[in-house]
Image 1 (cartoon, rainbow, N blue to C red):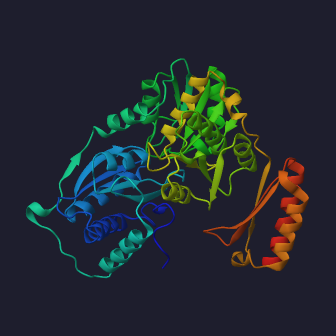
Image 2: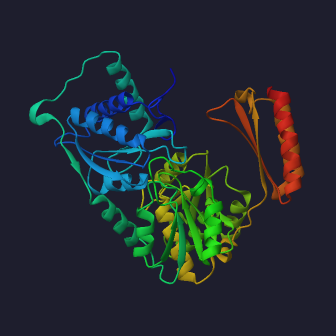
Image 3: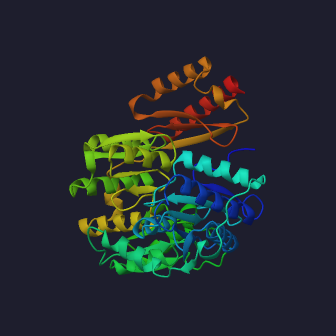
Amino acid sequence: MGRLFGTDGVRGVANADLTAELALGLSVAAAHVLAEAGTFEGHRPVAVVGRDPRASGEFLEAAVVAGLASAGVDVLRVGVLPTPAVAYLTGSLGADLGVMLSASHNPMPDNGIKFFARGGHKLADELEDRIEKTYRAHSSGEPWERPTGAGVGRVTVYDEGFDNYVAHLVGVLPNRLDGLKIVIDGAHGAAARVSPEAFARAGAEVITIGTDPDGLNINEGCGSTHLQLLRAAVVEHGADLGVAHDGDADRCLAVDREGNEVDGDQILAVLALGMREAGMLRKNTVVATVMSNLGFKLAMEREGIDLVQTAVGDRYVLEEMKAHGFALGGEQSGHVIVLDHATTGDGTLTGLMLGARVAATGRPLADLVGVMERLPQILINVPDVDKSRVTTSPELTAAVAEAERELGATGRVLLRPSGTEPLVRVMVEAADIEQARSVAERLADAVKSALG
């Protein structure tokens, strides 16, 4: 049996892979592991539980709440809120544990469980491993001590979470958004209420799409994975910019007034310059992954900002930021972390800060984004190969070296084994799209030949 926890909690098809029994059992196990680690020592434990609007979140939330309460943990149910809201409230309310039920940008049938430690930070891998081990032990019949009487957890609906979180978002902005017209695509997800309210309180004129969740339509043809509706709405309404979230609103992509996509790399570039100007870019450094567009790296070099690159995944970006005290990091996909104000990627905060930069400078988003030129990027997935030999194949090493010589300083090659599938991802960037495509196809053939 494989590891339950992936890079972003436990995910699967709700009621098939992710059942009520699993949700309940993991919650009990989490309570026991944190108790053994001393997290609850000297006080009655408290957990914050939230979810996105998926229909399956209703029964999964009930299972999680039941598991925690049966293990003696008091529960604050905050309802439908973004993942970063649950992380924020876990920290601001002094809770010992946060639980978010969401599968982010995945389709509606999926769902997931993510645990946050005290302070709203992601649980350490070691604690996730212990939770999984404890869950499996309980599932095999190992008894556990069950509290009774006054020892069981109490469950409270915490309606103040929405206002507390929105007030936090607006309160950390460097300036208001008065005079801006902004279209928000909530992906029929967890940000459907939060994001429009936050932008409106910050002074923007707000137009909404994708803000009518019914439990079944999350991410359906909308949000950060489907920008066509947002592009059209921004142009139709003559808006200054558009902001798109995913299902749990931990990411943000944008659209300028002409309807052009602004990805996570471009957002990072704009925010990095603004934060440096304000003296908030600690150590003059921004953190991104190896998948960031080469144009972003070249822009940071030109602007005199240091760039630290990590493995793909916002968890690795966050680890690097926390380890070295950096303030800004993120991914091309729109996971942007502003560590002074959030412990995880926060799509609403990212959109607000982007809007604040437009308002403060009086410059259109397209002009601000012009700080970097996004170089053409070709990505080819090569399936059914031995991905373990990517770095050890002499044939492949020679092919990569030849490609890098051809591309020179204005191009880049990256071969990356998939973390979940038997395939290798070939990524090539170049100043010319046809050159990028040609080199990528050649390398894909080399991967098949060397690793097939």
